[in-house]
Length: 74
Image 1: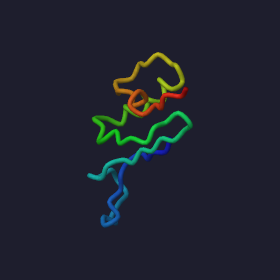
Image 2: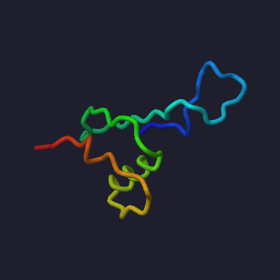
Image 3: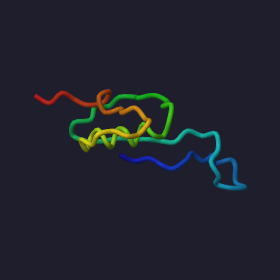
């Protein structure tokens, strides 16, 4: 998984504070399907995805994306 802590508008050079840009998120793996999970409600969705992948009981407010992007391996 690759992500960032916030999006940065390259045209806004005064600061690197959090701004209107979306945060990128990429996930790659042998069992990961190439799908677009769209714009998520919260950054906590990434944490929920990591926890589910590790088999940890979720105690975060996010929604896992793992079921949306797993390949069926036969």
